[in-house]
View 1 (cartoon, rainbow, N blue to C red):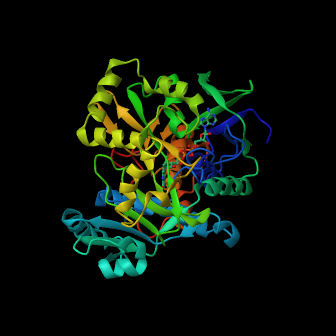
View 2 (tube, rainbow, N blue to C red; view 1 turned 45 degrees about the vertical axis):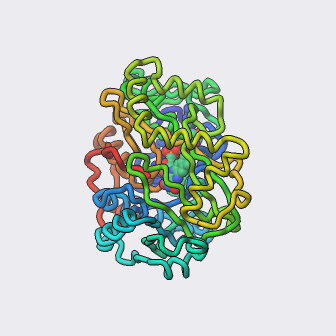
View 3 (cartoon, rainbow, N blue to C red; view 1 turned 90 degrees about the horizontal axis):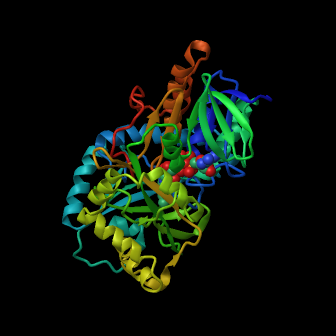
Length: 462
Ligand SMILES: Cc1cc2nc3c(=O)[nH]c(=O)nc-3n(C[C@H](O)[C@H](O)[C@H](O)COP(=O)(O)OP(=O)(O)OC[C@H]3O[C@@H](n4cnc5c(N)ncnc54)[C@H](O)[C@@H]3O)c2cc1C
C-alpha cells in the first residue's frame, strides 16, 4: 500500500514494536499500519541477542517479584513462548530454547527465604523443585564443586524454563505480521527526528526529510521513548538513570540458567550465569550495572540524547539522583561496578560475583564479552524522588510512549495486547480487535492480569 497516511505508526522495531505490529496485523482489521526503525533490521538495540540475558522472565526464579507480580508476569511472558510454539519448527528453533533454570539461596537467611517462596510458588508452578546439596550437584556439578561443606545452600529449580533470542523473535514478528497483513509498511534505516500534531494528525518526520502522517502513534523506542515524550510535552517530571549492563564469558560451566537471590533495592544487580543461545560452548555471566550516560550501549553519540532526556538542568533531578544513588547499598554497588572496568583488577573484582555460583572459578577462566551488553534506563520520578523499576507507559492524546527495561522483552506480546486495546479506544468504532482470539492463541490457562490500567505499578522489574 503506497500512502503517507496511516491509522497507526509504530516507532521502533525491537521486541516491543514488532510484537505490536504482529498483534495489529493478526488480530485487528486495521489496514494502514507502518513501523519505522532507524537500523537496517529489527532487534538491533536492547532486543539484540547479545545485548540482554535472553531469559523469558516468568517469575519462578526472580526473587524480586512479589507473588502477586509473579501471577501477572507468568501468563504475560508465556505469550512469547506460545507465539514461538505456533511457528513452524525450523523458525521456532531459532527463537525459543527450552532451558532448565535455578535460583540459588546461599546462607541461612536466603535458604529461609527460598523455602518460604517455594511454598508460595508451588500453586503457580507445580513442577518447581526444591533442591539441596546432592541434587544440585547432580544437575549443576560446578555449582557444588569445592563449596564449603557447611555452607547452607538451597535451589529452586525447573526443567521448564526458556531462553529466547529476542532479536530473532523481532524478525519473526515482522515476517508473520506481513503474512497476515501484506499492506503493512516497514521502513528500515529511517530515524525519526520529530513527531508533531497538526490538524488532528501526527506528522512523523524522518531524517531523510520524508514525513508520514498517522492518526495514532506508538513510540516503542525504549530508552528514546522518554525523549520523544518530553519533546511533545509529556513526562517532563521523569528522568533516567542510565545503567549499562555488560557481560563476561567462560567456557561452558553450567547446564542451565543459574540465578542468585536479588537485592530488593537493586533488582537488576544479582549476577547470573546463562547458556548463550548463540554460543552453546560458553556460559555468559552478568550483567554488570554501571552508570553510563548514553541511551544506546557502546554508542557514545547517544550521550547528547541522554542529556536531553534526563532533565539534568533541573535541581529536582539532581535532588532525586542524590537521594537514590546515595543510598548506601546502591552507592557501594555502583562504585564496585565502576571498578569492574579497570584493567587487570576489574576481572578479579567481578570474579567474586561468579564465585557465589562457581566456587572454584579463577580469574583466568573469565574474559569480557566484547560488544555484548545493553542499556537499562531506569526511570526516576523527580516529584517523589523515587526510582521506578521496570516498564512504564505514558498514554497521551492518540499516542503512547513505552519505556521498556527488563522484563520488557518477555512481556512484549502482553504489552502489545494492552496497547491494542488502547489503540481501539483512540480510533473509535471504525475497527475491531479480536482479543478473544489472541487470548485463545497465546494465553496459557492462567488468566491475564486486568488490562484496564495501562500503567504497571512500580517494582515490576528484573
Ligand atoms: C543487560 C540487559 C539484560 C536484559 N535481560 C533481559 C532478559 O533476560 N529478559 C528480558 O525479558 N529482558 C531483558 N532485558 C530487557 C530487554 O532487553 C528489553 O526490555 C527489550 O529489549 C526492550 O525491547 P524494545 O523493543 O522496547 O526496545 P529495543 O529493543 O531497544 O528497541 C527499540 C527500537 O527503537 C528504535 N529507535 C530508537 N529511536 C528511534 C528513532 N528515532 N527512529 C526510529 N527508530 C528508533 C531502536 O533502533 C530500536 O530498534 C535486558 C536488558 C539489558 C540491557
